Structure formats: structure tokens, C-alpha cells
Image 1 (tube, rainbow, N blue to C red):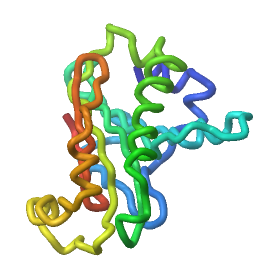
Image 2: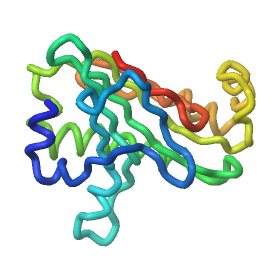
Image 3: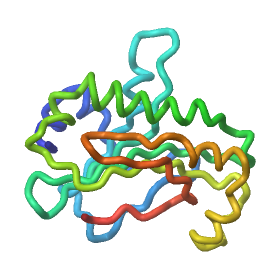
Length: 181
């Protein structure tokens, strides 16, 4: 899969060294060597289209190659550096993931991402933000604390599906660790 991504001019142009924006992002495990992952900046693709209103899309797609041949973990990541829950709308966040799954992965680049010779090991969706400045909490404390109505709605939404794998939107604090599979 990595060779096909790197040989595709449009996808190669989206490749980045990190998934970060406005002082938040994801951390990559020290065990992940450069040949084991690819980060694609999905919103750059849609913003480059010559249309007046590009569809909402996520910030990053991180693909991690597992040690078992032709097996991959997919991480869809939306980053929001906000000071309160009013800094986003649930509908917009949901549209970003829908656009990425249905259009980017499922139509525009389906020849790569829907290719059955590449097995999807894990499929995870992350909404990374800290609207209450709670980074000092443990992940368990954070999950309990963020269950305001807006977050409840995003967590209760119908799960997303990609190639037989299912994931809900996981609201996590900035800089979660992406590990090898």
C-alpha cells in the first residue's frame, strides 16, 4: 500500500512528517520507524480542489504498517485547539469523518484503500481536543469529565465503518500516542 501511495502524485503531495496543528497533535512511538507509517494531510487535499466550498474533511490520516505483511492500522484524526465546547459543531465534525471515509477512501482513492490485498488490522477515529484544559487528568478521568451533552451526542452517534471495521469517534486529549501494530 505504501508504494502505491508514494507513487500517486496527489497522495504523495499530501505526505507530512507529523500530524499537528495549532500546538496539538499526535505523538508517534519511538518504535515506529519512518518506513512503518505514512501521514497524509487530508484537509490539504480538499482545500486544493478548485471549488468554492470544499467539503469538510479531517486533518490527518495516519497509516501504520504492521509487521505482518500487507496489514495496516488506520487512524483518522481531527485536531481542534479550542478553549470551550462551543469551538466546534458536532455536525461539522461528523461530516469531516464521513467525507474522508466515503469520498477520499471510498471513491477518489478506492483503488488503493479498498484494495482487498491490503488487510485493515485496526480502524480508529480520534477527535483530539482539550476544551476544558483538562490535560492534567488521566484518560479515565477525562472521559468521565467530558460527558457534557455535546460530547455525549458525538459519542452516541452511529459508528463509522470502513472495510468491515467499525469505530466510534474517540474524544481524546492532545498528543495521544500512535504505536506500532
